[in-house]
Length: 206
Image (tube, rainbow, N blue to C red):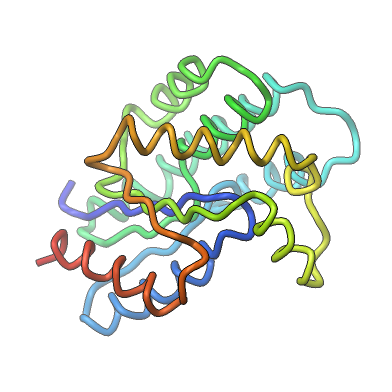
């Protein structure tokens, strides 16, 4: 595969959507072919799974939740991401397997190694070239989301300690994979964060 796979991670309200939009615009301005996608929900099947995972009113067991995310990921990588990479495109994706390790592993208190292994199996071991982790305190992220008009989904509505476990897991994972995961202060000015991201990506696309 000749394309570049870039993922964005972070708690809800960390600013991922803003930075993904900024990066895509910058790359397109450089004449690059960009595929912007997300998990869950990057495919028609993914949209159905996203609705079940995030908006179901009934109870979903932690293991079932992890398996639903893995099913979405397997289909998404097979139908969207790998074909785009094979075309030589730059894939910019909102969330990937690091989210499952953080949310289902640490958040739902499942075995993080097993959760990661499930995702690696589902994706045939595809890893991003670089992952940008937008780090903000869980309380700040929750406050940011509370200022928007959008309703909380099932994960966003979890208690603060759940989101603190998620954040701690993300940061621990960044220490484990420093060559892939770049931690950025999500409370910094938007343009400053974008410039750091663009500088890193420039090294990959040059």
